[in-house]
Length: 292
Image 1 (tube, rainbow, N blue to C red):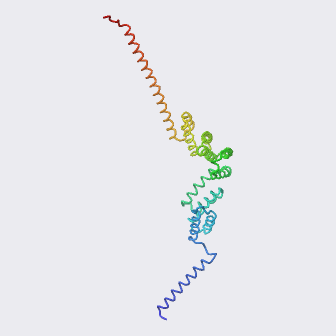
Image 2 (cartoon, one colour; image 1 turned 180 degrees about the horizontal axis):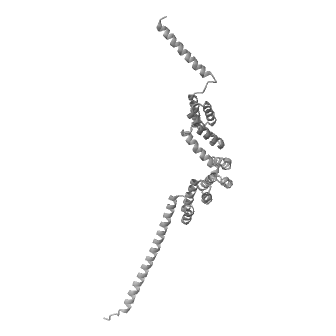
Image 3 (cartoon, rainbow, N blue to C red; image 1 turned 45 degrees about the horizontal axis):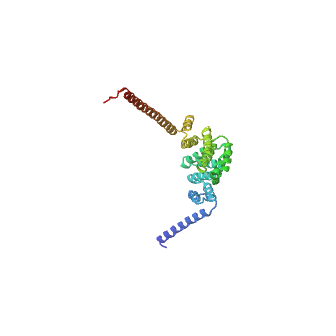
């Protein structure tokens, strides 16, 4: 057999051995996972999350698979973050915190970890009552009938009044107020709820600002500038709103003084005309009539 033929045989044998090893590795259930396996599972999960409707169960299974692969740290961090988001969507807030914590621990410098830290902060700020108020608020936000049923909305408002102090209570009251104002056209009911938010020291400052803006807007729409001005004096939460209302008050005062000045000038004009007529009559009486 020639040397060239032997070389061909040896190369073919080597390729066959490598192919056999690769196949054995693929078939071996105890073989270690590869980064590509975790990424494939993550891609499958993302497809399930992008579906309409979302296939949450399929996404969870794929994300669990990506986490179990445990090789590609970035893929695993993303998988934990998406598991946390699914937990939030399902109202399992304590479980979401655990998933976000795993995401941060797996790859602290990744953008997934940065996003997870924001979600952890958001959830911890709304953890009053062991997340029960947050779960109730979430259910109410997804209930389309709430905005069309005054009795149900009123019942939810009373339930919210019983929430423990915290951000969720203020956000729930905003939900009630906006439903009264926009969906049911009951501004007085809305004003009552906006007032509760603004007066609540435990409400989220941003929520309080939004409540005051809506409150002042409603009073201005009703022509109640004094109530709006009194509100921004008591709670100067939004500098731009304070400036706007103060400008309106200033303009009203200018118009008031202009009206007073106009009235005074008109009175002076009438008096001047009256005096002028009186003077002419007096001069006519004093002037003797010439007899021709």
